[in-house]
Length: 113
Length: 112
Image (cartoon, rainbow over all chains, first blue to last red):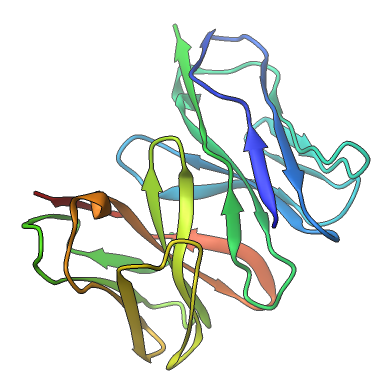
């Protein structure tokens, strides 16, 4: 079945460092891909999405490009801030009619001042 | 923020007791979901609904049942709670035209 694999955390960075969180997926066909973010004590919020190959999703300085040839959707940010500290989840949406999401295990990002 | 309210937000219950979690939406979205979040597993789908009285099982449905008698409410019931059901439970909603899902704030359930 479909699955998502993302890099283990925690990832600890200094403020203004470059961030990459790797995400790869296994799916038959062409799923939509997402990054969700979870701040402490809160629910998940959509950070960005891409619905077809070569699409680039971007939001709040974060970017990810849907790479069909490498089945990847890596999250990047050029300069992280302390306020970016959170858990990041990569997910894909199944291609059926019900938008079910399949999540990776999450990556904890800790940004130090 | 999408209008999704989960209740209760926190609950401690004893093994063997029944528990019902409620998800209420004000967005009139057709699809509703229950996920559980556990360390090392991310979020896993328990059950979902694609319309009033239309529900189906997800990846980890054993020990759970759901009901949806009206568009805005989706109930998750643990018939006889076990310690393995200690988790954080999230409700989510989405519409057929938009792949994006909106999540509630979560319910932290502890089974002792």
